[in-house]
Image 1 (cartoon, one colour):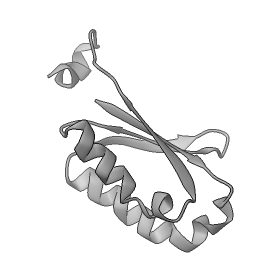
Image 2 (image 1 turned 180 degrees about the horizontal axis):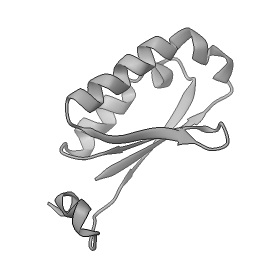
Image 3 (image 1 turned 90 degrees about the horizontal axis):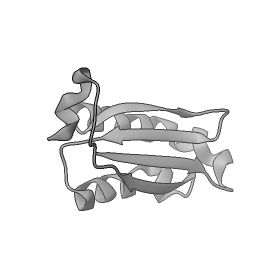
Length: 95
């Protein structure tokens, strides 16, 4: 399981210009079954993506394709998490 922290960079003002492409990137990740959760880092610091079902390298490549990353609207940090204990509703994350 992975978390990508997408923190706004100095080029944050360009977000509106690339928002539609960024939202398409998010939709594609959800449709592909890779993104489990996408949300904002509060207050207004960027976004986060929770993902599973791919290798670390595949996820890093996907994050690098985010238009916000390409155009330096955000700086991405990918964190790998190895779940040890989960609520039964999230047991699928341990596989």
